[in-house]
Length: 263
Ligand SMILES: NC(=O)c1ccc[n+]([C@@H]2O[C@H](COP(=O)([O-])OP(=O)(O)OC[C@H]3O[C@@H](n4cnc5c(N)ncnc54)[C@H](OP(=O)(O)O)[C@@H]3O)[C@@H](O)[C@H]2O)c1
Image (tube, rainbow, N blue to C red; front, side):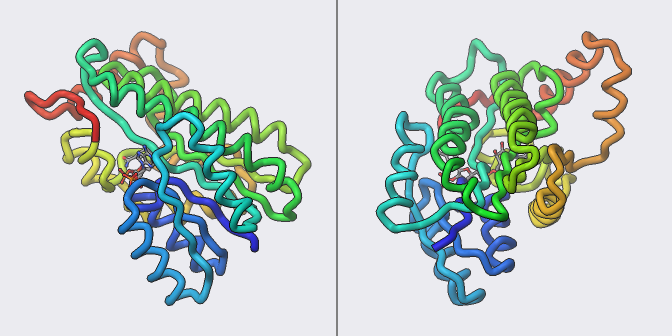
């Protein structure tokens, strides 16, 4: 059975990916740590769209997580055709004061799991006539962001990795997209202990996912989901000015008196 594999599907953008891909009549494998949420979503989508939706509860920050996902797919005789590498987490604050476990999770989930899962699933995906990889990066990927530094650097990695893979897959049936949302009202700022104000004004998760799926339909390499002007203007600003401005925005995301702890 062909399936779309979605990481971080228990809430936020990942849940929205599950809803919109299910509406396209695709079978799903939903991955995250929150088993109850995954199961409830899978059952709802199976009923509503008459598809199969399986769940795999997995902590993607653990070494070997991608191998576990691959083993699950093989055991269940599932053929991955779409992969949405969406799971991720952030943290704001001074680097030297950041919680060590959260730094480790950011690196493992945002980068290692994304690359290893893509690496494990791509050979099978290449057998499909309509294979998709959607890697969720961020507008934070386009410049260094002081006080959001590990997160933004991890998303720069995702952006560059995805663009490189897009080129490697040129002329094949595998579309690779780096989706770069701006601040989006999900649970992201809650687990990251960030001030909600910036996120509340952002595009909805439903709009971000709809635009991402359309960009993937057209095999675009990158989609930026916010006003393009600031990113466009950055190309004409000196690098020191860009990093100072980005750091000022990130400092505004810090809640007063709150550090960064593991979610
Ligand atoms: N919201 C924004 O403003 C924004 C902007 C740009 C980019 N993004 C990116 O968008 C993606 C989705 O974030 P979101 O906004 O939807 O945030 P969210 O609501 O916090 O959802 C994050 C998802 O990632 C999963 N996850 C986190 N740690 C995990 C782990 N160790 N193992 C497995 N799954 C894990 C969570 O599931 P469990 O907790 O159940 O494991 C959850 O399903 C992330 O890559 C984020 O960096 C978000």
